[in-house]
Length: 105
Image (cartoon, rainbow, N blue to C red):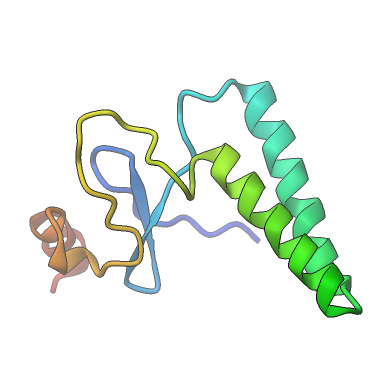
């Protein structure tokens, strides 16, 4: 089941559980995005099925790498110098007015 999450007006973040999470880099081609999502899903399955600490560390590293390729972690994909506010509550960021409008807070 797919859930729709509110996305900031600039398209950089979506909100889940009252926290901002970085969106996938929109400059990726569809082919690139599909490749990295496939790698991410495989890595997440590896985390679930890891039976040793070594396997778990390797799987988590693969998750990190895929999320960096997607632009969801690591260096930001925008180039205007705006700070990364991942994991912040929207009301504590430049998105406070937008959040108040859509959430009623």
